[in-house]
Length: 333
Ligand SMILES: NC(=O)c1ccc[n+]([C@@H]2O[C@H](COP(=O)([O-])OP(=O)(O)OC[C@H]3O[C@@H](n4cnc5c(N)ncnc54)[C@H](OP(=O)(O)O)[C@@H]3O)[C@@H](O)[C@H]2O)c1
Image 1 (tube, rainbow, N blue to C red):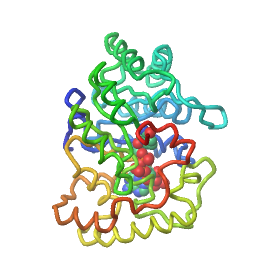
Image 2: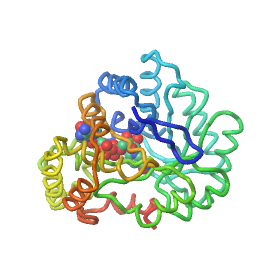
Image 3: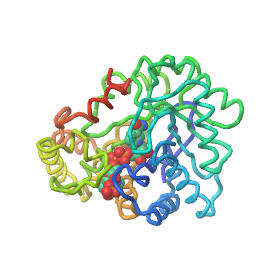
Image 4: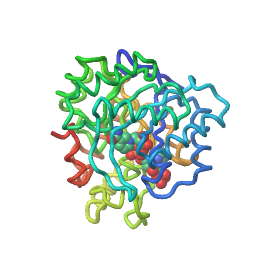
């Protein structure tokens, strides 16, 4: 497995990371045994970066990662665990904003360490900017936890260029986690150049647009209650047909390369720079194996041009999130 450096100060991690969110209900029910087997298969393949959030399944995702690590027989330090905190939820799965006050940092972190069964988190990040708290205070509070030995590196998630600069002035930021894919290229104008100027890496999520551009999604696919895709504008009737037409154009390019659609979409993100680490949201070994095949797909300039002609910038229909969730994205302001 190739390694990539997360920013100029962050850890060296596998070129593809595993995002565990889907293993805790965000895409409908997941099979726990298969989820753990998928984490083991990822580690066997050399994946070292595992991404979670304390609010994924209200702690379920962290407990799952703890169990997977324990049953793998591996040392804790063979993997880097990235944790998001701050999202406020309720027992019905509702979302109630974010809390990134310094006292909340300490509180969330203590619970995460307990659930993960570890004494440190490799990259700790607020899931969203808390509009009520200056980013300097949140970053300063995480920096204190680095001093205390509970955290190794600071990351951010879905923030814009100005917030990146303010945060980085307080403490070096290892990486920005943000949606980036063939159909979500918003970071290219300002956020990615700013991250590069500051030496901040990118962990790209949604590289398959939550399965939409995986080559496996069908317009008539059933969506379980609670599955994010049931409310996502990109999967909404009308929009999904436009988006799947882009996927069919991409499929033609992929097949000419002897690759699958998912591999081509992931390889395109990998090809955008050594400072970018795609997170794949596989929750089954079969999908993981397909996704990791992207590492063997070498895209030349003419391949990249063909891919971008098949899926032109801005061609996707629908926003990344519903309006209420878009309002929480500092990266979209
Ligand atoms: N910072 C943030 O705001 C934020 C937001 C969202 C996610 N994330 C993180 O990023 C990670 C990845 O995000 P994501 O889940 O949206 O990513 P994604 O990789 O775009 O989508 C994952 C979905 O794609 C489907 N899929 C189909 N073929 C696949 C293949 N070959 N390999 C992998 N998946 C395939 C899977 O569905 P099936 O399992 O049904 O096949 C899976 O549920 C998450 O797990 C989470 O850790 C961060």
